[in-house]
Length: 546
Ligand code: NAP
Image 1 (spheres, protein in one colour):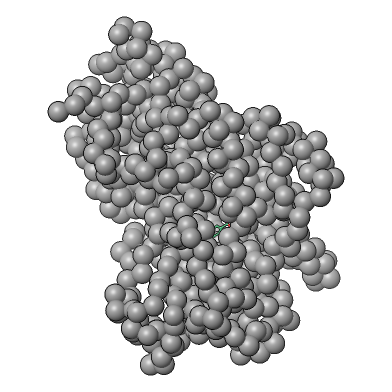
Image 2 (cartoon, protein in one colour; image 1 turned 180 degrees about the vertical axis):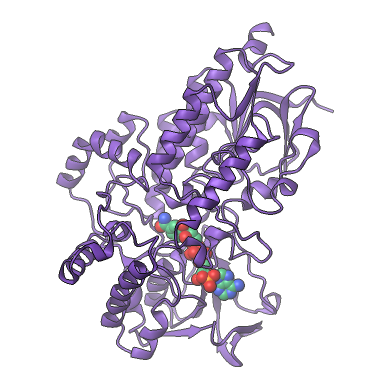
């Protein structure tokens, strides 16, 4: 058998995390290889290509900040970038930094096993590679494993079906077709208005109505881009310490700390800001039920003002869903779409899907003839990609076993018993609750600095202690208990996947506060981690000796 290829570090995934990790590892003089299942970089932005897809975080902030050259040279064209533009951007970054030669595409990682004798990770891939590395960085993404439909009769459907999270590269022609979209989360809300314009008829199957805020997308003028670029330094600095990694001014007052007039004025102002700026109107929307209900009623009124048929508007108004506890949707013409003659809304909570038939879908005993079904039903979020690989750490213990009651991490960065294995934006970190680019850069910087520390100090191994992991996991839960997040059935708490443990997955303590904690841990000689010489030399020492 051929000897396994050996690197100092293996990075799994060439999304925004994996690309930056590679850059940092290379800058440290370590040998690194990125293994990526897709044929190109971008991660979730590579696999998602559905019509209407844009990033719903503003392009000027949803981009790398680590290199001033990159942020000055690249020019975004719209307030919210399309998938195509984001894909062009990440490819441009990869080539601009000459990273492509260290990325192995079309390579899906299937296993990662810690070998106690060599103190290395042994990585296996679907195409049969065996690779060994001192460090293994799981840059596998939080929204990368689609929640695949498990609906009776799907295999008999004579039409075509697609999933938003695994969209084909070729265009799908909806013209003249009867299309069904199942799911009204961020993906469905973006796809529905665009598909409705093309399809002969669109039937939207909604299980839970979510809150959607207008994007107010527009082209970026040269002047706007210039202003952003000139102000980048303070704006980026503001995002680092903000609650969710954005540039909005954090709210200082609660909903009932102002008069009714001022409340309405402020909500209107934040509605006009669009997107997640809406959540920065007041500081207690996510923690106080009465505040949440008041803001929810404001959004309901907006929906009713747009949707002409009151019965349809009623179905579109969220019920028993504290605003923001299910990730907000951000839309262009979503509610307006339900005024179209060729669009029907079916409430599948009241009329559950019976089955998919050869010619369509039956819900509540009624047949809906369809040519194409679009599943916009989301992901096995945050843990899905890690558990699919199911790394095995010390004593051959599998991650699935360690996480059978829900994910347990220290800082969302490491798992006890899995030395030198890092999870980028893993469960227990702010991650999906924040501007992902801000959280990704923070994690990659922390991991890279940690690896540099080990190499510099002749330490071969780092691992979270079980005590620190236990403390952190409890803290993550306690913080969530102080919010309304546990009251909603969402993917944040694993509720969208049958059998998934019902625990809060992201850390809700805020991006700025979390950064201080992580930096403090590093400054205290990696408090809560066991850092040891191990039995084998560090990656740098081993290379010097060979
Ligand atoms: P999602 O938020 O999980 O929404 C899935 C939708 O499908 C929900 O309406 C859900 O209903 C419904 N659903 C799930 N399983 C179903 C079933 N078996 N039968 C019928 N309906 C079912 O997924 P998503 O829209 O793909 O978004 C996931 C996340 O990706 C977002 O929250 C966001 O973080 C990210 N995203 C970001 C962007 C961006 O622009 N940055 C765009 C798209 C997505 P229930 O609510 O009742 O479960």
